[in-house]
Image 1 (cartoon, helix red, strand yellow):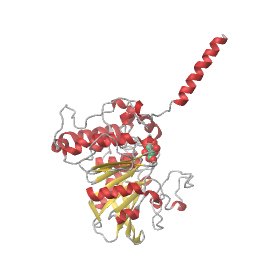
Image 2: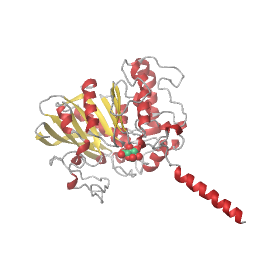
Image 3: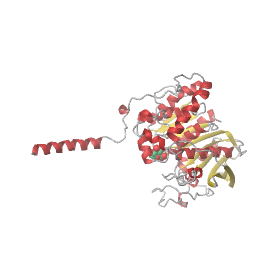
Image 4: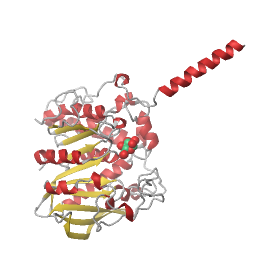
Length: 423
Ligand code: GCU
């Protein structure tokens, strides 16, 4: 009896130690499962696409539909109205180098509406400016110290760092995120920057009673249907509608708009670029799982984990692939391929293992054959570049030193690349 309890105790201890030493998420390259990378050029009928015309005619839209139905969700119909109003303008912003505009965009449907404010900086001495367009995480007022930036009155995420505990924005958080927005560098580079607080489009919480989704509901409906859009698709939709505004503003070159985004907002810029081909270029900064990173590698964040932590980001159908990535009919390199032939920049950070830098890189590599069909250069080899050694072709990639963030280094590369491939 004694021996049995001893044995049992021993067995229990071994199991405990195993559980503690086995991390819940894989960060070990040797444990990445073998998987088949779905060939972007192979059609559902088993034909191989060999020309850009065939890609556009026979492959692209079917692939897009797979992402819509299984990952991000469909937009359920047309809006009734879209209105813009310039609500503030300043001629002397960013050390006297820029003009500022704040534009209220209002989307209406079914006698309901939402509004969001687009904050725009443009270089003073330029007309028809190419522009980076991006959502921000904590409110337009956090991207720069400029006291004229209108503070949002929408729900904001609580933040210990910013002392936000009641989901209300704080005056003291003005400029709190300015390190992520190299506005002066952007202006000096001859570009504009437009940014929107994403919480004004759809608050980032698992609650579909508010935000853009709620305008589209039929009587009694409380949630999008399983194949209908999650928050990422709603945020992307707002980027597209902002492009509609750019088409009306003579100071902006609407043919040179680059969708940019960091992290969940990088997932958003990618989906915006795939959904709206008016975007002239796309930048994904550390977008990770559900962004640029290949899902089937299951490295760092997984599909099950993202759908559990953030059940509102994707369509409900995406849950079918929790711990079941093998059966996903697509992988994220095909999302990148949907952006072809337009310039695309994928960037990673060395310490951002959660986002799987290698998976982000390989995704850009596996999207390259589609760019090649258009005579565009992508990522020529599956060997990752050294840190801080960007590859800048129509498809560009860098991995920089440091953490999950947007840095001046990142912006320096984006501006250089955009000057060559978009401007
Ligand atoms: C979490 C999430 C990521 C996301 C990131 C962010 O870490 O797991 O998928 O990219 O938040 O948006 O900051």
